[in-house]
Amino acid sequence: MKYCPKCGAQLADEAAFCDKCGSALGQPAAPAGSEPVRKEGSALGIAALILSILGFLTGFMGIGLVLDVIAIVLAVRVFV
Image (cartoon, rainbow, N blue to C red):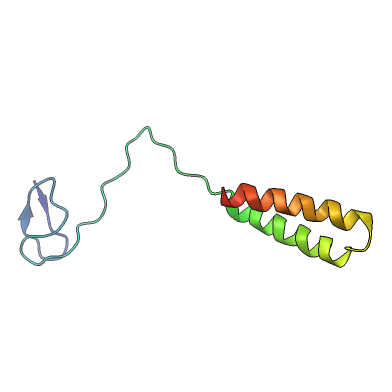
């Protein structure tokens, strides 16, 4: 048995909300063997943004096109 942290009412082990006061009891803990989800999208998104700005600023040179292509590849990787 578990108890409500807000009102102290006795609850069933599988309860998600308190029957007495209605407060949420929180999420169950993750299984011991599970790994946290790693978010690498933000770093790649920032890299894509910087490369696209550099590609825009150097657009009249050959390097600008290369930087734009790299930025597009990184942006696709972030959103797919």
